[in-house]
Length: 154
View 1 (cartoon, rainbow, N blue to C red):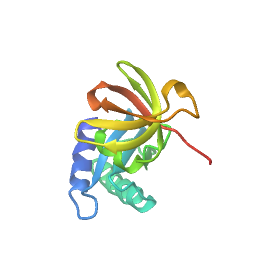
View 2 (tube, one colour):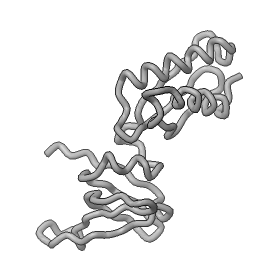
View 3 (tube, one colour):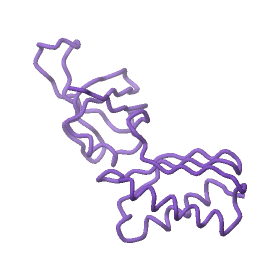
């Protein structure tokens, strides 16, 4: 039977290969022996080819070991904008984008302008006023409960 630990082990093996060193697991959803969804990311972002390669790798390991049902569902994708950012290393590729951040001290919305070792810096409008000058707000990474990238169609 497939376990989350086995999936992590398989992914560590794949991510040690040339061209996949920057990849990392963001999340997974394992439903018994019938369905596995894996969400991966990398510093540069994840391409379709990367997802396909990881999917085929996992598929071969699953089938070699008979670890899931004969008709199982396997999905490998990037987290997408609907999933919150979980790791500090996910933030740099979103520099310049609007984030909605829930912290232990309240909610903050602003443009991501810096990512440091243990914090992010947002450019925010005080009081949400559009014409007000922006201020920089540093947020310690360990105080972030949830952070989502806001999609803009401008």
